[in-house]
Image (cartoon, rainbow, N blue to C red; front, side):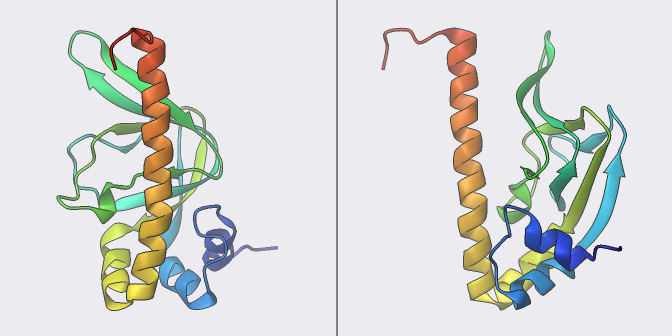
Length: 156
């Protein structure tokens, strides 16, 4: 049985529950992709033109530290989204994302989807709400990681 892009998009946690036309809009900007362990999905400061809906495998979200090399902020797996900077100017990645395992994902063209979201404010609002929840989750994970690295301290 072959699964269509629309089916893959509609069952991904980020987009599940969107109306059929919204799913069709996203699927129209999507393609199926795969990565080998160690491959970069995105690189800090490169143009943010694609985001990924993970289907299988794990991806490490990293930041580069001079003298230390890459520091893993978070590792995400199936059902996660990799990349949100495609939605917010200046459309540049703020982190690296590297495949830890063999990764299967739906790659969504951010410029294509931005155009559709601007033409359809209902779609744009739905996407913004969903991506904002991903941002909040990532900020919370980063906060926890910083607490692990530097301790709780007494300063507030």
